[in-house]
Image (cartoon, rainbow, N blue to C red):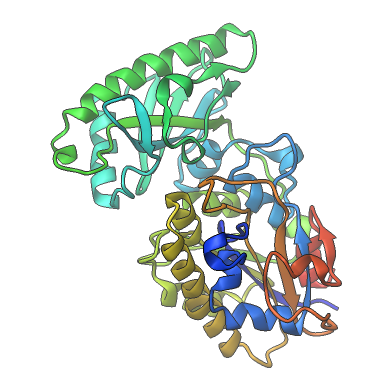
Length: 403
């Protein structure tokens, strides 16, 4: 039976039991009646979002959830976000994700987001970097907050570069986090040398920039990572028997996956990727999009950001906001409409670690024709005991669409 479906994706929600929560995870300790209702009325299991040998990043995880098999199709985060921004990459272009970060005077990476720098300040800094250093070899492009792009142009550059993921490297000396060549080619060696020189110049420029004066976590360093060339994803409609899909997200990595696969990408004004995002706007967009699409993918970033901050109180708030401001109103508006609902994180971000881990995530699916199992609430502990089992690849999307 063909179905329409909404997938609620809570970025970074999964965690580990914490002593201060009586051995519960933040999800288990939070008040989540809407997600619990999906678990109670449906089937529960786990999903492998981060296959072995790939970066433990959200681009890989969300490609996995949508069934785009990053094991054979992963292009790097830089080019995915370039697609989202409408940046046309030539065959010899290499796109890097480029965080604006804060490095303390003792040479330690202290904040991967430069204090969650606001969009306006970040855009001005990226504009000024382009004015100062942009040329035929390199261009700078602003994104959302700290999430920006750097593109290298020309055959002498390589995407075969080893890098450190900034949100997994906080409180480490930057001297231990340098880029390195992933092969023996002269292009890879030159790319590392070029970016090292460019990084030093940018650091000096940003340290003296007026917009960084007085900031607790100034954006005084650029952090290029996850390079790649133009992505080549198979269209969603081809993967799923002509079905149409849409994505709703604040961040370029999700919108880039959507655009690269021919899904409808819905822009929601006021969507920020943090706790102040426009929840009501995302709900309205989802309810409208499901009228013309078979699957709507509603992604919320805030929980991931709170996890990387290591702030348990904020993470719990973000989980409860996701439940009450996204999941609950969508379920209420579509009750009795024959829609299938799924909820899951894209990966864990344990508060104690402040970085992604590869543990399979909890998953719950409820909808027409789905016989409930015995699980009564949505959690990392209970999901593996459900009847759904362990899913991977395109099994989730196929199941919710009835394919």
